[in-house]
Image (cartoon, rainbow, N blue to C red; front, side, top):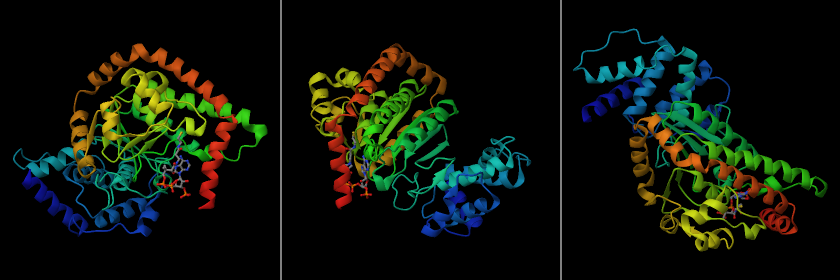
Amino acid sequence: MAALTATLARGWRRSTGRSPLQVVISPGLQLHLSRTAMPATQQDFENAMNQVKLLKEDPGNEVKLKLYALYKQATEGPCHVPKPAIFDMINKAKWEAWNALGSLPKDTARQNYVDLVSSLGSPSESSGHVKPAADRSQAGYETLLVTSEDGITKITLNRPTKKNAISTQMYQEIMLALEAAGKDDSAITIVTGNGDYYSSGNDLNNFADVHPSEAEEKSKSAAILLREFVGHFIDFPKPLIAVVNGPAVGITVTLLGLFDLVYASDKATFHTPFSHLGQCPEGCSSYIFPKIMGSVKATEMLVFGKKLTAREACAQGLVNEVFPDSTFQKEVWARLKAYSKLPPNAMRISKQVIRNREKEKLHAVNLEECNILQERWQSEECRNAIMNFLSKRTKL
Ligand code: COA
């Protein structure tokens, strides 16, 4: 494997003209590359190739093989060279990666190459998976980064400057991403956050600028959106894993009960300040949290807004395992990569066996919670709390 790494690194240097450890994605370049919502053009492709030359960190053999294969497919079409001899391991690995793309059209390979390069992290990111450009759009998403490779679809909440608060647009995009992930050929789906937060929960601006005469109508449509959103988590057909990289607030905490695994950095906290905001629990937490942690602990969180540390959340059964932040990404991704190699159909069916008998109940709870929230959002308590938050922001 060391030989494979060294040879790929040499090939990497040859094809990029740089050492795999050379630095810096310039902000200008990043900005330029961010305009990839439309199908990738030849210019996007060339920009992506240039960006590869500027990557600080060696992205690893797996990614390099994928880049190699997509490059060959995009420029030469399907693999047309004979398979190297069995002992020529490096060329055999490259050939296999290219050949595995089958008859993938050149345009799609070009697009996938651009997307893959865009998903490679900057030097500051310990995971090496997420690029922090807040304005970047990918496959039509403006608030998410979505990548799918090696059996893992990763949905990254990507509004780091807003602590990944969930705007109405992000609600919609998460639903679209879940629908796509539910149907793609990945074995597992991950949700995580870009930046220091996992998510600060519902974007409180979703409630701003609502004229009193529109309050009833707006609350109704927000309740419909919330119900549909939570429904996507209830119905998600394959293992869904939360990689909680930092603090989580509100709905991004309550939804965790609908995930199949939750891994947390020791920097994560879990906070549901519903009463402080004049609101009530959602995400089926009013039913699931008492089941997993007992009603007194659930009440402490959901009614009194007690913020849990990651270790407390783990002790209470909301989190599977907590990792030191310094090794979080490395340890978790090693685990996830191993899980993604398990037979996908067996995992999907097992998840469904575990979850299905509760589904009807969960949809009923979701409906009830949304109906109650629809009322709460029109209450004076809620209006005042949100106005307080928003007016503090304007004073700053
Ligand atoms: N809704 C809307 N905007 C939010 C937000 C939210 N839930 N969470 C963070 N933001 C915005 C802030 O307004 C700020 O925007 P600005 O830079 O334009 O002023 C930016 O994100 C950074 O947040 P800031 O408050 O400056 O960071 P912080 O580290 O001091 O505090 C939080 C982070 C999450 C503790 C704080 O922003 C907060 O309490 N947010 C509200 C959380 C909440 O109540 N969520 C709903 C639960 S039901």
